[in-house]
Image (tube, rainbow, N blue to C red; front, side, top):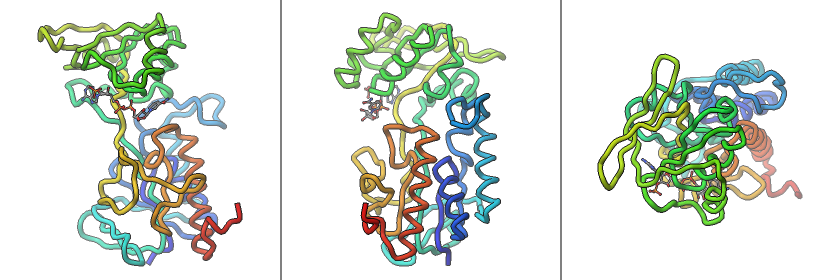
Length: 313
Ligand code: NAP
């Protein structure tokens, strides 16, 4: 039986693993089918403190993994298909066959950006298609970009991207935006943003150098046109990766795991959540890493028989 199992190898899971391993907890880290998490989908990371010249996303994740291994964390590849968090020890089924047991669990399975599912989209991620304006906006300085979506994220990212002297066009499938009024007003008042409403994206167009356009269809007339652009930012929401939990942990109405404020405790003692699986607000590598550290410390205290709420904080 394991003392602690960490699910997920993004910045949250790997930071938790580093701290747990250094505390002699011998964490087992389970790596799913997207090792390193969302950062491995980006190119250069320029806002992670400690790297004045930036660092490539995959390299940053490799470094974190090596650091966890150095202190004794063990890794195994597998997909958790089922979890039983009702009985103790907790049990996890991996790849539908193997069952492992653990006293505590750190859930850091992240969230995946939703994609449109249109031709040219997936294959051009990192070549002009992005799901993170905060991460990649800087690379489009002085260029033309399109943001797809009509929610708060799309409005926020559109505004953010105009800071880079970028021509920004919002493409949304309906005539009305979903975003809150304040976010809509902010975007409407920004003269650098243009709009293509009632438009459904149908294809990302690219050549050997990267993205050159987005094909959209007018929902009333059915007429297709190509919007020439250097970048396509998809901002149609995220989906926290919690399906394997089958409702055993308390989530909010959008599926994000709920934790006791200021901690990483879930509604089940001994199960901790960190990173994007419990955070739809910040979603940054550094904030994920921060909560990963918190989860490890919370877990350590729990195993010492000293639950977080007894810290006297
Ligand atoms: P969201 O509110 O779910 O909005 C997603 C948008 O993408 C919607 O406009 C939706 O269109 C569109 N969309 C979804 N699937 C699509 C598809 N297949 N093709 C084309 N368009 C599609 O997601 P979000 O904007 O990421 O926000 C998530 C949560 O975080 C919200 O609660 C939001 O308020 C919050 N948030 C808050 C802030 C802030 O306050 N600063 C910033 C960001 C996010 P429809 O409208 O037609 O459904």
